[in-house]
Length: 151
Image 1 (cartoon, helix red, strand yellow):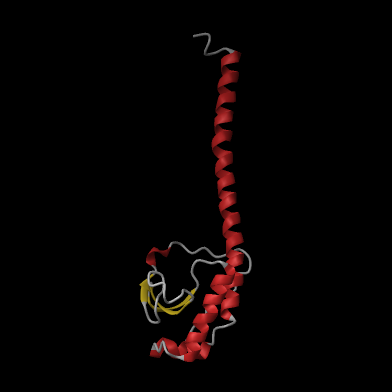
Image 2: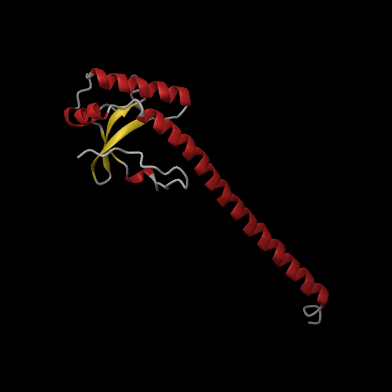
């Protein structure tokens, strides 16, 4: 019984608890900081890719494509080719432009995937439910509005 009240036991107990807390708390902060850093880094890279893709999009043609779904339109084919080029040059896995249909349902307008890749290519007008795409977190910096809305 006297061992539990000894200074040596209390010292070892407090030191053990302190080491345990440090070993649990510090890694959780490190993981959280690493996740934030990755989100910011890839987010900024993504913004530059999106801005580059925005520069090749013709809004008038986009509005027309949303209603006609004419995949033979010359401007549509040119924008798809530009998206493919950007996708290949930047190394991103997917590069596409979607428009909202209703709620979480969107339709593909431009896809930067090669049409011969039937597994990943989404033709003009293909609808997709994006509910399971995960939570979208805004970037802390450079959070300009990246979408164009049509009336």
